[in-house]
Image 1 (cartoon, rainbow, N blue to C red):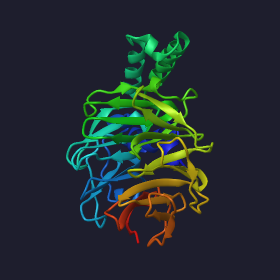
Image 2: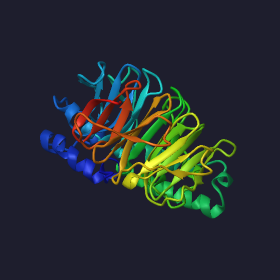
Image 3: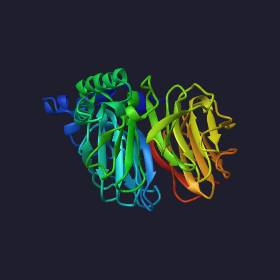
Image 4: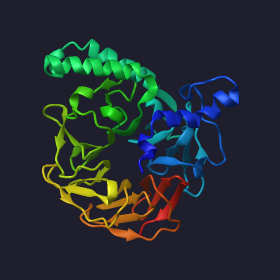
Length: 358
């Protein structure tokens, strides 16, 4: 189900190969190869979608990014400097946006998603991480001597892997402050809009280096969801992400919620909700048996969920309960974004499409 996010970088390499080595006759890294224009970009695999206000932006395979200014009726392909598969996108302001994906790529747009530039990739991120921990001025802040040494070794190992590890989600509080998360506990923070990034590998209660699939601020807290039931919440006092216990050990793929509630969701239709900052969690009955792959908050306590099999659910009480929505064109879904309260845009293997939400 979660091929869109955790397929090994080898798969991304294989997809990119015909566009680089074969077509050009010589190998060109997907990180150095601009995405090709395609009349089918909006109908191909799209993994992430976000609303900037009036505009909707979707990202997907081979560096495809498309945007719509008419509620999803028509789409324009953006200018993108890489051919890497992209999996997530966010816009904290109508103009400023970030997208992340395979090969450790981080892209930035300053014009609402029409054009993009590369801020970071796996080659530079790995070396940044290795350098940061090797030269950390306060090894005590990294834990015990053994823990600090292990962090340095792990950072060097990841650095040596280059662009092998993907980033899987991105979240920004505003145009300056944000996080990116990914495979094997990868997490970086920026306070200057992505000009510089600081590894936060040592700030997560995740000793097994489980994949981090999603990061969102909901219910008054900043949450991370990951594999094997991992849920983390940023502790403002310590500046670390602390582990929470939902009682579920299956993987969580996302985080959603509202002002007073947080919800995590994932495999086999499982979803859990908390109204006390993550101290206690209650299982939400979704009626789904397949993976919940995307969610969006549409305001006024309305939440929308989409699933691997193409089903959509809506809640008007911030996730206490859900009801099914009859879809115009049922199809597998990867992500969803709201167009106001009564409409949404769904992204998936068959592209992106608008859908009324009644």
